[in-house]
Image 1 (tube, one colour):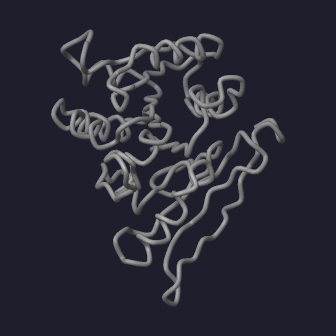
Image 2: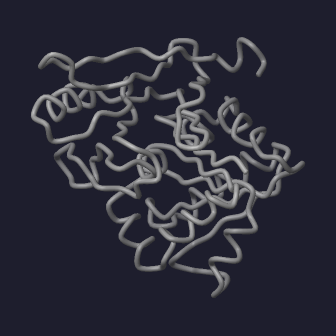
Length: 236
């Protein structure tokens, strides 16, 4: 059974409401027809407006959409509900607060088991970096810092690499100072698709969107562009 994680730097229904390419790509990775997909808006405080945008977008796609709120849970058996899903899709917001709530409710362990059971884990921004060992986050106002995350994927991740001008210098600074692990930077409109813990493919919903492998080489930051498949160009 494949273990799949799809981490979007930006895009999807919340940032590209008229471009479902990335969301449709995620659904197509499921092995079931009309897959069950559950949206977790924990990082936004389970904002009802975020849930409504999710339902509005995915009602037009070939799936059965659900949501789960930790502030207004509809079931006491979170584990059974999440393990019944084919895809779990995590929204953006405050990663630090999201992870704290997940750990309090035991979702960190449930999500790990879901991955092992073949449930696809996906997400944007906070929902992208949360799967790695470390992420670059603006969870604390006024600064971009390093946050320990779930560790389902090795290394680090930074979203919105081309969309927020402070992201690139922050990643370079943290790498140079040895404060963050090597990892990936992901533009808005680009997504990293991991299979069994290894990067399998980079896809994009915008022609110029890219992802980069980030590491130190000979005392300098090396930013290596990764080949990306433009989803609207090849129809995949």
